Image 1 (cartoon, rainbow, N blue to C red):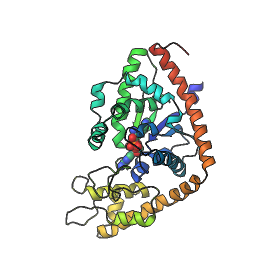
Image 2: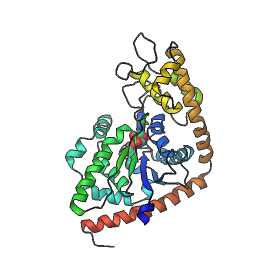
Image 3: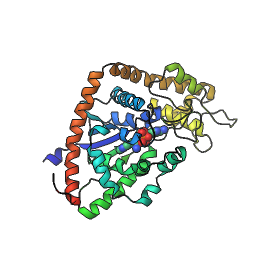
Image 4: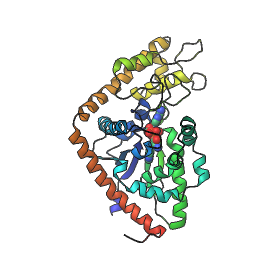
Amino acid sequence: MENAARKKVMLSGIQPSGDLTLGSYLGAIKNWAERDEEFDNYYFMADMHSITVRQDPAALRRRTLEQLAQYIACGLDPEKNTLFIQSHVPQHAELGWVLNCYTMFGELSRMTQFKDKSAKNSENINGGLFTYPALMAADILLYQPDYVPVGEDQKQHVELCRNIVQRFNGIYGDVFKMPEPYIPKVGARVMSLSDPGAKMSKSDKDPNGSIYLMEKPEDILRKFKRAVTDSDTENCVRYDPTNKPGVANLMTIYSAVTGKSFDEIEQEFAGKGYGAFKPAVGEAVVETLRPIREEATRILGDKAYLESVYRAGAQKASYVAEKTLRKVYKKVGFVAR
Ligand code: TYM
């Protein structure tokens, strides 16, 4: 009977490798927070993934705690969601090693994130950067989730995780549940405001391309006013991602924060042009982020509370993770401790 009553499980994580952006929010966190009644949820700060790129230790610690405060401020109630720091749950590293041995060199070589990141960090193409998807598969499979809510750019890693499940279960029987990526219809790929051909990224060197969750309203407005629109002479708000990628990106953002459809947006700005559209998108984003920023700032001031959240989260996560790890160790032939 326990199974019949079992809620479906959701799990996801974000690397504290930079300040959270509007992309992290619309592609991931917003969708987590909307579903916390329906599912049993696990969300974590992927600090172990972050060190695949060199980090300043003090900044990594600060961002990890800020990220936790932001998760809560975005609506993830720690009573209904298990919120934890990846490095606090050692089973991630343990299962990560095992899964490394069930992940093929060829599969890892095809990962576009590896190709992008090794091109950007040519002085530090380390083993962790290459085998990172095996650790990500461990993050997922320890909790046997039904769904993994991520943005479009992480889909390839979830697909690789599914290949690992197939391979592992093919050898040892039904050990892992097959997870499904869960990708939002609008906001799955938010692009840079200064270069609509590139993803909005936490680690972008150009601060004008990204909107940060904690950013001041005046800075957000300024960035939207300066956002790159398209070089056509049409000056018309119309959804055409191929020919008008800058406008399409702004429409996506506006749609995600207001809930309006692309048709409704086109009608709202008919005859008004980009000069009216860009500040309107900026205002809508400011109003969406204002309560999040205010609440995150308040929570960050309460270090004891944050500590109680991540401790309880690690304890609960570890309990669930250990069950899976034991099963795996037994299957592969390790002597029980
Ligand atoms: P990360 O930290 O790069 O991004 C976190 C989440 O935000 C989404 N995202 C975006 N969505 C839309 N538009 C954007 N511009 C944008 N930028 C980021 C990402 O798709 C992601 O969902 N490997 C993962 C972290 C991770 C993980 C996991 C995720 C580690 N273990 C297990 C799920 C399950 C990563 O680097 O995401």
